[in-house]
Image 1 (cartoon, rainbow, N blue to C red):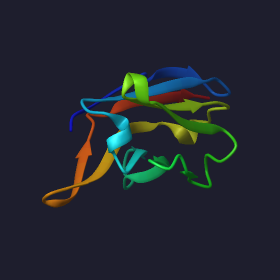
Image 2 (image 1 turned 45 degrees about the vertical axis):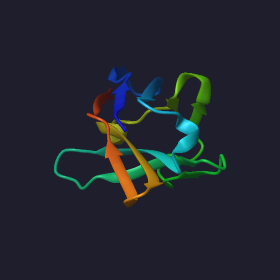
Image 3 (image 1 turned 60 degrees about the vertical axis):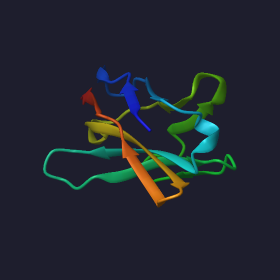
Image 4 (image 1 turned 180 degrees about the vertical axis):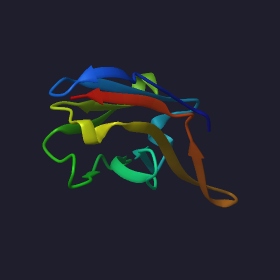
Length: 118
């Protein structure tokens, strides 16, 4: 499975961005698709994820500000980011997990940079 992330950019604090993650296969066949981020000098962390059941999880730091959603017809998962803060500055990656004949499989997108200016 290949993932193509897009939508990053430069935005002022308080602004919004929407990230997109397009998969090369049906989103419905993936067990979970998530957005992670990695800020300079920090470890990669989970931001939000959506399961095939449509259950969603969010990191405490983004609850109430970010929304993850999916459009199966477009094989895409989105991350709507509102009320952005400088601490949201990071490279954002999408990730997919599924189970195949070889067991648990995992794929990462290439990352998209989000810069929030204060």
